[in-house]
Image (cartoon, rainbow, N blue to C red):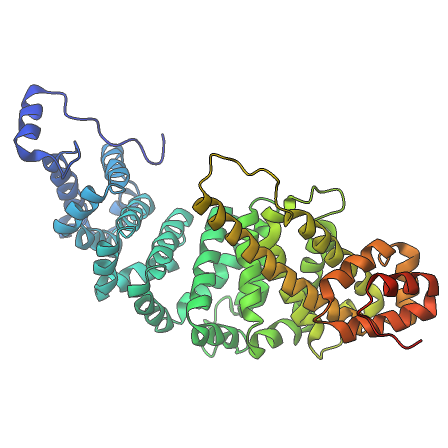
Length: 474
């Protein structure tokens, strides 16, 4: 059976048709108010006191949902994507009914559907504001993050992301989440243990949005991982885990890596946001294992997966945002004062130089404007699209050039000789690097050229001739 069956068809009986014609329609839709009242009344009955006994005999029954009721409430779920229906549900105080279900029902499927309907309703600003300002409903929805049912967690995360994306109410949800420290543990548990890619992507989007909205919350979550919980149950004490945000983000990134590029992009951006504060950088590099895991994953992505030599240059358009995040994090680790085995110069510099220059080469191709643009696009549309693409490519270029300049500054004569031998520092690649680094990084390029003169005078001379602005004393 489909998870979300199609909405109910228009009433077929003559009596029903007369009733619909007489004002039973919801807004401009063909959906029946009378039918919807019946479904919502059925929901109220499910959670009424006489139907919520806690005896063991009723326990199993409470975990299941009657097939007919499931079909009907699923239709409401689909219908709630229509604004007229959503507003009617709001007018009928349906959110209060769903709150009662979430507070009392133990049926995972029913809980999932109720949160899903609220998620659809929240897509409309007026309703989103109303839902967000209801403190009791807000508390109940946040407790759904402690649920063990992945579909319910998915719908709860979708609802949260929708509300966090509304400027008018985003701060309300940030404050509520700050007041519930256990949410941190629950989200870390999901990221570190779930194999549900859809859930991991949506939870990642929630975390990314939270960190982007509130640096204070991000700092709290970073620091939470460094403290051993004071209260632990005696039973299973050895199995209690101290969740740390970076290892959990890495685990989720590994899980979505091969299946969802957008999801990987989200988790790389979370890492990038962490590196915008000193505590975040320390959370990555201070623990050798965490630093090594982070570096190895990101190093593998840029050196062996993204923007490879046999990829068409246009692939950069698809990968530009995730590459910007990855290079930004690698650059932050590289620039940190923590010297670790995994980032020693002779092991990583040449492969990174090769990757960075390859990205810059692909970028030059992507930024070439076609001679004849498609006539079907308006000038305004073309300008908007090009501006958006150019903006992201510029960010990637700026990050790549800064990272490349940092690596150039620490290159030794031996490393340059090895790069010439292996092809990472060929004339073509050096020319591309110089073209992008100049004029902003002139001192760095000039120092590199001095070293190159000691290794290969002919190549150094050719490059200096190609870039007359360089002043190198030999």
